[in-house]
Length: 184
Image (cartoon, rainbow, N blue to C red; front, side):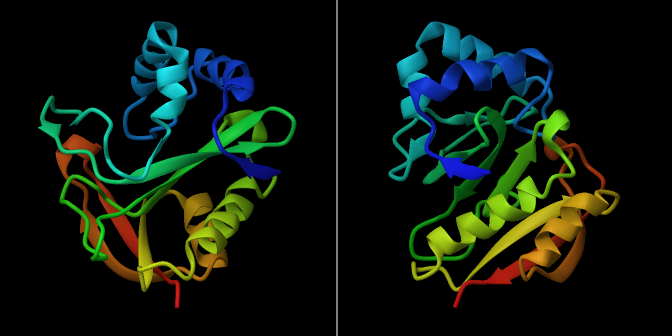
């Protein structure tokens, strides 16, 4: 498995995953339909918006309907000859702080038929290698307390538990863990 930059040649495989009901956002299953609509409307624009280091894309609409400013970020796609999942990185320039609507610097999701193959662990390691040497001293990643697989992925990549917290309702609520991974 490798990480690829989203490109038109990968879009059909990504779209097929969305059509199965898989969502790149585990807190918003409806994201799959939102993504399919965006792809149908303008596939090239959709691809271009997967990499937005200058936060030029449209504002984000949260689960509760609130519109918030976009922050810099990008997605990489897990690829083993077909689409396997996505991993995203977001940040606020000049600080490790994130806005309250953003739970962590990194989020990932593997399609169900590719799970238990170590793809998320490898994807996180590859992404961390990419961002080391930048301005951030650390990144934070969150997961629900019952997501043992995600916790293992984070810990295998050097994640240290720094807090237990309640997610805001617009992120689905529930108890979660916040992990920190040192970059320097």
